[in-house]
Image (cartoon, rainbow, N blue to C red; front, side):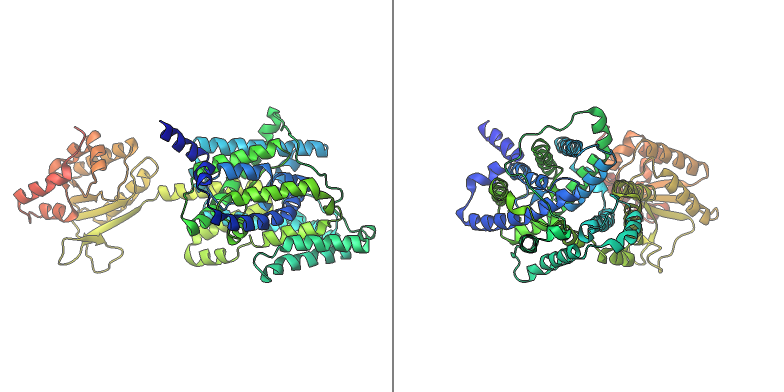
Length: 583
């Protein structure tokens, strides 16, 4: 009993599995990674909060309690949880559509959004719905991510150039606004931003653990303070409150939650897809632990609850931070705990140092982070390999760019489902013929030396026979039967690739067999798997065809028709083709 309780706790609280066995040798890697990622999180958290339309301090709040909660409940030992560019933009887009009347109301809606995201993710994990994210296919995620990265990048132009631009997630509106306001560039701000981009972009070349964003922040603060640039129009972060986040309560107003639900669902799915994808990539390099998709949803849900009740906003696992965490030597989520401790110390003692931080430097942090999300190689690769997936990627990309992020991801999911449905309704079907000198039958469209017989049609359906595809199958069968020009005497249905037959499929098979019998055509079946034989038996289809017409393979069916096989041998062999478990 005690062992069962222990296993249960370890399953749902993964820290209990690794912490009791924590090795001193792991501490060096975790300490190095924790400090590196913590230093990285300070400017990133502030920048992403600004992107989300919040005061920079809320970005730091979002990497304290949520980070600790994920460290306790998450199954990935390297995933770094916190604000990310994509979720920040989705947050801004979702809340802006509600037209909040004040910064206080905006914050309340951000907290409510984090709570709702937590509720959705926790609920999905508890109900074991981790598979739902599979509806976001790779081309859809790729197209969506690239388009969102462009939108995020353009949204930072106002801070980089210090020009007035409307808050929009439609690329055409943003480009027009930039064109009309480009003449108002504040060149000192622009210069600081470009300097920040250069430091962050190329600082890593000095050393992989070089804290480039923090260096850019320090240089930006130094320039503003040293040359009194605020009086020359450079916009700064201003006073940053110190101290730990106090307890906050999201709004439980049903109208607000109902309005926020679509964007919360989008953040839940996109955030989990991004988080689980990077977690899987990193876990493949370690293999000393297992990822659990449903537990990851629960952990992210709890992390978002922490954000909602401690003045944060929606969080998820980030690509760049997780990669840095892994490269810096993280062995367990102790690294995340160390990062959170560093942020707590910053909140308690060092927030005053960020007063003169230029907004252009935070914009530079975001711009460099999202530039890596624009993938131009994948569309080229798909164009050469898979035109359908290329079309899906480009459709998602263009819809996201022009109609907005929420519309883009929903459209992408619908496109993914439509492709699945389309393929499900059109199973691969093949006409088979005997390979000369053998008893083997193969697809006639793949091998030109195979000759079909005019009096026999041997066919294979690769997939289930069910309500969605029976019409397509029947149309194909009728076409092949017509091609025989009235000479057809035997139809052999090779059932080896059939995985399922539903009630509609069974009903249609009855109809087809009866129709062929009426036309004087014998129906036969071959290569039927046991579970499918059970289904056919349950629907009396084996009796309809006749057990004498159920064969172990295509050769036996055709040889029996031609009387070229010993009846006793055939009866003995076919006993393996007709046996069922359902009486």
